[in-house]
Amino acid sequence: LKKNDCERNVSCTFYSGSCIAAPTASPSATPSASPSASPSASPQPSASPSVSPSVSPSASPTTTPSASPSVSPSAHPSSSPVASPSASPTSSPQPSASPSVSPSVSPSASPSAGPSASPSVSPSARPSSSPVASPSASPSASLQPSASPSASPSASPSASPSESPSVSPTQSPTRAPQQVDWGVARVNGGTACTVRPDGKAFVIDTGIDLYHPDLNVDLDLAFVADTITDENANDSIGHGTHVAGIIAAKNNGFGTVGVAPGAAVVPVKVFNENGSGSGTSLISGIDYVAANGKTGDVANFSITANAPYTPIDEAILRAAAAGVNIFMAAGNGSKEAGEISPQRVNGDNIYTICSIDEEDIWSSFSNYGSPPVDYCAPGHNIRSTVQGGGYGNKSGTSMAAPHVAGLALCTNGNIGSGGNVVRTGTESGTYETYEIASLI
Image (cartoon, rainbow, N blue to C red):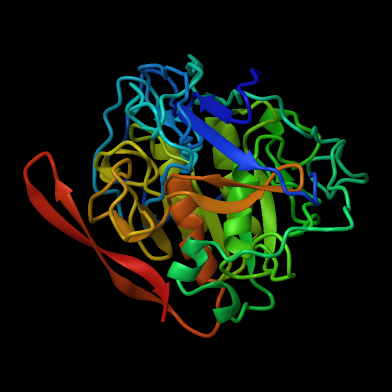
């Protein structure tokens, strides 16, 4: 772990990418059944894919990703549509190496670097750490934040922790007044949303700050993948906590407010406190959602790979077939979302989300293509909750996907079009139009 002022930089392999964030601390808080159909093309990776969060900080990262495919959280937006079990992915994978996975979030601070060399994630800032690909059959991921994590989990992975993590929010007598972020307002969420009482949002990510005062965390359903050895689902990196706050931060007069205020968020932790994970951990997390989610629940998957990987595609299909609505970040590689997993999967209950900025302008880092992209949503300079009970801004498709996931928990409307965004295809001079998601 390296400290770089107040920035956090995360790079992972098993779908390698980068995740960087510049959180602003809050004054008041610290904190299997197989699918009915499998993708039509089966990937033949020679190595396991790398996974990493697809959020790229606005601050300039210093990491250089490896050549192997990577999956990254979509902080720089990384969502993509998910295919129904009967549908097969639109593209056939032929990776030379198994994809790497990483969170696709890119901080809202001014980006100073271009996309990483790794095909799967292209953060707005140059990544600060280099991903390490795992030669094993199952993809491995490694997140390496530039600052040391603020909390370390201390409870059992399969049940709610018996005691609070080493860092829990401090209750300060005064808190900053509540702010409604521009992204929540743009999709017509927040106070305009009537939240489904029994609805839950499963956040497949780096965990969630279990005791953040602005989040309603379902500790009983919390899950930690066996392969990452963490003791509980607490988030020491911040990516999953940021995603959870966009979906459902409480309407309580301080901090921020989510699209579906106060909805229960379930941490499904597939990256450990050091940002390391594997293909096996990702698949086990998705299968946990399929087994425990109810029809109408949502799952946010702000993780992308830079290549096709059939086992993850099939896991997404299983969860969608169980009735859970899956919202995936399209990815931050400025390329066709149909070339990577699981974004290449299309079908019922599967949505892939691209990113726009405050002016309804297409985010240059966002992956594209329809199919599989279904909607665009705010993914630039998004303020939300972060680990340690605080708040911070991030950018990426990782931030776009949870805006739409939150809308799916509102009972007083449907996800529809709130306008359009046009992307000019630099590769051919073509124009593509995407709908901007909104509660209508």
